[in-house]
Length: 391
Image 1 (cartoon, rainbow, N blue to C red):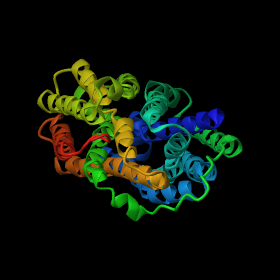
Image 2: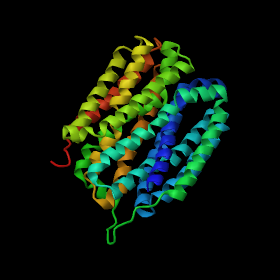
Image 3: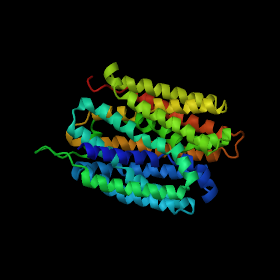
């Protein structure tokens, strides 16, 4: 079981990488393929939307055929195939198609691990295990930052993608060979998606789940690159360092949030406090968008750290789910999270396009930061009416 979870963790590292590497490649893709920031926002949004669209089928598959076949088959066909298509791309359309495939391939890996945690471990341990898995997986963000910039510069972005294709394929084969599906207790009744929607407590969690990762995923996955390039004339190395620091902050935040609910005694208020600080960092980016690359990097890192509430929110929702609804319930929450990033990317791309020609270099990005802050504030307001599992 440990080796299987480790391989699913490696799959999640790849998932985190693929959702974030466009930021570093944006200068190269602009030169080689003519891909504009709006094109890349659209491609990034397609990754998140295809990932989100697969969550309900993945939830059914986890509850029906188990995580081994679900994760291995999709990662092999979608992840490996999408990376190969990206490597031979000659125009932005090919990037779009590749990101759709990669999103499909990455869709089951984290939920496969969470399904095992929910089935094999006590609910009280779920939040820590879930946070550790996210923290480890977020290492993919680090590889997608400065190391990816170096690889693209040294061997070229196409060769780098072929290497990723090979790693993804081998990971999928390993998952098929090693992962063991948890046993289903005899006589357990089948759940349904309708049963998840009947859990009223989840309706106050869906909105915060939809916006909590949206600005983190959108900024780290794309906008930090064009923002630094346009406002601070940053090169690939500087963008790589900034994304690396933001990725490290995301890892640290994921690991920090895990034990906090036990220390504070409330999952809800851990999430409220972290989201409020995340919102404060976004507002600071709105107010001081051109005050220097150091301040901008620090604020991006703050967004990454305080925005790492994903696993804690999943754990909050998990606490209201009966065993037969775990697969469908967690993937529905994940659909909200990843779908929220997709919506944010599409909306931010439209906002960027609408602000052209820009009055100042920072003006389009102020509008994007404002959009993300407004979405975050709305989700937080609804979440204030939620309750902890023990109430």
